Length: 326
Image (cartoon, rainbow, N blue to C red; front, side, top):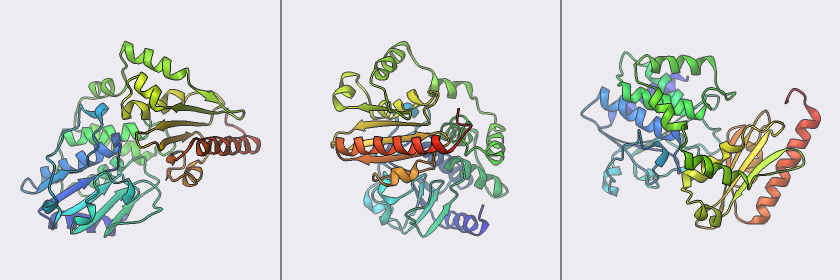
């Protein structure tokens, strides 16, 4: 942790009476958890401050922790401190009025390819932005307060972004931060039930989705979810995005991809891998992200085919030059 930067962030939080927290479009557990966790810390420490989470996207599958804030008009941003969490670039920010804030802070764990903000705290080796907020609380716990609800939100983001602490980004520091949060005494069984249990119809739905799975010669597993298929299966945006997890455990498949047609006819790409670095591949297709978890966008079926071909070549090269990948 860069204490010079975090000291400056804490000073800015103390300085402002109105603080607006923002996150990326199509928010996941880390985006929701980090904004809600930081809001809890600020409001619990300084009850008199106005703190709002803004952004049009709401995550249906996280409704059990998500609390919607009132929609602010443009005037509310004037003179406010904006903090964008878990948002690699301004293009990814769900709240497009970030530039109306008097000052903007970036707190993120993605590779800092497009820096922004008056202050920027980025640690791309962290498991999650929630881990960073937990570490921030820990570093300044003499000056900060947090409730069990805030700790639960941060823990949720750590769990989901680390793949339940399975991904390579999980470190000893990750587990120490998780232990700090668990010591608040919140209940975890209901959280995991909400996140991971499936009803009978959902299992049948997954079986239908898996009928569309394909595999390249070198072992790239992929799904293409057309708008027609999404309508047939009554998929929400969250449902479609979550399909990437259905093909993440195939032996010999070290890269897996979900292609999701959107209403504007672009094709959202969720790109995941084991051992193989894929963020450079994502960069070539209007995206980016972590070494082994990235997002991209294709604008035609031709681009989809090209991305699959490039992923297959990447995996073939990796397998030809490496051992120990099962």
